[in-house]
Image (cartoon, rainbow, N blue to C red; front, side, top):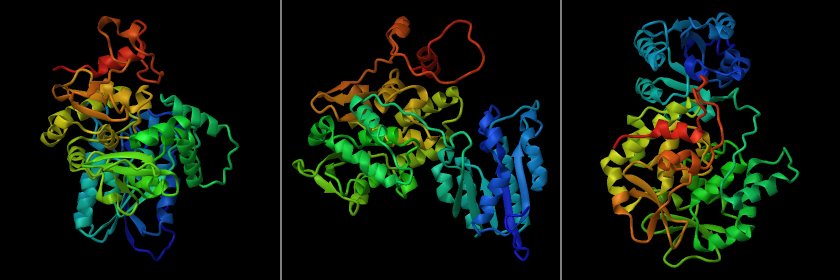
Length: 467
């Protein structure tokens, strides 16, 4: 089967499958076995009309692994060449498939100049550099992967990107709980209404924002100004897998500027870089009103902007992973991110005065694709950051006058009107299990433990660092 049914089309297309990325590691679930279809992926590629007939068709994985037998018939039907990549003792070594795929792409680039279109089926950010190199040779690059586990750098480096349905999240209702009782009350109230499946997603967002501003508790907070992350958490809890990029916005703040345009809410900049959400009828003194027409000129420092050059550098130095990785891998990656931020010269300068927690959140989401605090049992970002920094030189602080103002800062530089926020989930020496708030269970390692261990103890042991 070819990517196009046009028999007159030239053989100008090469397709490379990173199967290890598609199955999310060899410990994949039954949903992957039942829902992953190479036929469907190839059909979506052909429907773009951007490919010719297939000259090279390769799939990379440890095909000696018997768990991949469910894909063997499709390899034969589609005439896909299986490229077996294994470790030193027949096992799997991380990145071997990525490297072999990249080597074969470059080899094809130089040995088959007639191939003009390259399709890379993966969401791994490591392929961003490969895509850029192909474009330098005037080749068309098409990416294809699951939306929730695709690195944004790789997606932006491609000329075209094809989203395929993730078998593990399709039609699944993801329930997200928030610790702010005001948000949870509103969400439960709205969810209790009869919903029309034909309603556009924007209608749902407008409903959420209207309920937010009409809430007595939030309306009082809006008079003083609240952090944009509060609204992001509220929308994310009500709309599972919410992503502003799905609406064409790189940043949440750009999305919000568009969303609040016809509401009572407004976005205010407090120079030099503090952004708050308030009411149009109560503009704070010395604040600059931001709208969708001028928002791009502001908010580029501490407001979850991936164009932040510090985060750009970090994404080049730290390899991204999917939130579907094991708990241990996710925790180790979070540890690596915090250590990098604390050591980076430019970040250190900002951390002396304090960095908006949304910037740290943005850095985490760029490296751990699809991550949310609930992945580790935390109900909100403040709990996660308090836990991540508890034994580092950094800490999360809260303004004691206006409790909506938060900063991540060096412990040696805490301003007089700020206090360290200590989550109840922090360990308390040998009594950690007694004082820790129970976390929501999730599936981690399958091997049995010798004695009962709380989820909190598992996390604290994984993240404990040496200073």
